[in-house]
Length: 280
Image (cartoon, rainbow, N blue to C red):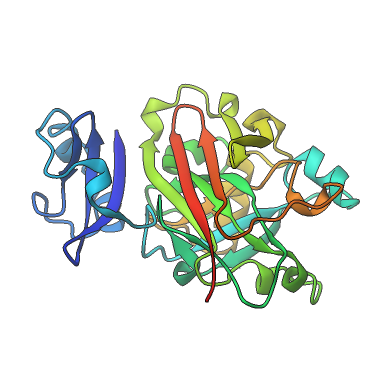
């Protein structure tokens, strides 16, 4: 299934995406948000509506981040060999983690905001892993049982602010810089997550291209590690890292600017598209 969050006529809801559009689950099920629906564990309730007539055309709503209200957004840095090489860093035995905040996220087709303070606004295509049930100290062997699904993510990065200190956070959670969408594809639709192909395109040009078997720390490893720190909850998001090809490491550098369009595509999942808008 494909599940999304959206706003229609000022009312926030979530739904199932099928060939006819969006089936509004928020007005059919008891769970008020997609996060609550995942926590209920009642996927069968949505599966019964897979062939239902759509309430809205897909493009006739404002798309919200897939999970608008996650308890945690855990981002992973330096998690592809090619990206480590282009940054000149060394591989670490444990994952490099930093946090985003929900207020920094936007949905599909909504503008990525290039902030006033910088002209170094970079793209980072990534695969987001959405957690489906609570767990603490999850083993790598059991980790995939906790995955509800996958989505596309653009971890838009303000590079000069990212380098203000040794901590990444200042450049990683500017308002309106994290694209998350267009929906989550449930894990049962992905036969082998390591074979998923991740591509980023800027104005139609492919700038990043990899597969998830190139991750330094695998998805099970990330889940096991993060769940050791504190419990993972339904709707939590692990943004698994970006591959090589980021704009800051190109010669000359390639940064996003007003009027650009950035797409992140994950095979078997979908395509996240966002225009870029300079903050006025």
